[in-house]
Length: 278
Image (cartoon, rainbow, N blue to C red; front, top):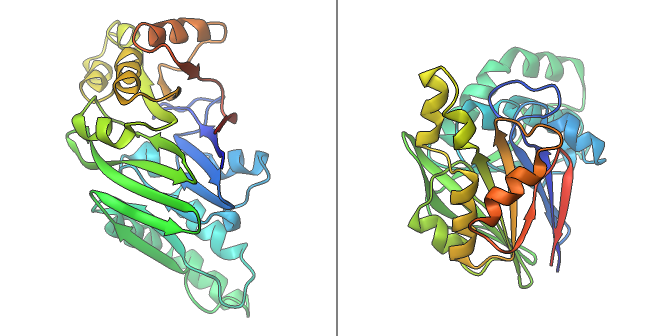
C-alpha cells in the first residue's frame, strides 16, 4: 500500500508569501492525516481538494507556535463544514500539554462557538474533539493504518514527538523539529521515507542577530538530517520547514548538502510538493 506525502507548508516562523507554515498531509489506507497545522494550512489543503471535514486525525509533533498557529481554524472549520447529525469527534494526538492548548483554543473561540450554536438549528454542541497525549509507543490503529510515536530532542521545547505511519508494509516517519537523537533513529529504522525539518546552519550563522543563530541549537542541519536517514536505512529523505527559505534556483545546493551524508533519493520543493512512497 502506497503512502502519499504532501508538504502543505514548508515555511518557518518568519511569514513568507510563498510558503505556508509547517504542515504535512499523509494519505494512505483510505485515511487522511494532518501532521501539524501552521499558518495557511487549510488554504493549502484546499488546493488539493481536501477540506477540514475530510481529516481523520490531527497529529501534533510539538507545541511551538509555528506548528499550531491554525489549530483553531482546523477545529472550527471542520465543525461547521461537517453536516452529519452525529459528527465523529476529531482525534487530536500530541505530546503532554496538547489538552491544555486545545482547551485554551476552544476558550479563545468561545464567543464564535456560541454565536454559531445560537444561529444554526443543526449545531447544538461545541466542536466534538478527542484529545490524546502520548510520549512514546502506539497512538493509532485503524484499518490498515498504524501510527507509532517516539520522543525527539528539541529542547528546551519538551516533550516533542516524531510519528511513524505504517500501512501494509510501507512506512513513513515524520520527524518534526529535532536534533539527531537515538530515539528518532529507532523510530526511523527500516522506514521507506523520512520527512525531516531542516536548517542551513551555514547561512543562519551569518545572520547578525543572536536570536536567529540560536535556532541552530535545536534544529537539524541538512547534513544532520541526511545522516539520520543514512543511519536508519531509509530509501527517501523528504526535506521541509526550510530555514532560511530556499531561494529559487538553489535547490541543488540543498540536495548536494544532503548527498554529503545520504546516497538515497532526496525530495524537496515548494508547498504542495507531493511524494508517493511504496
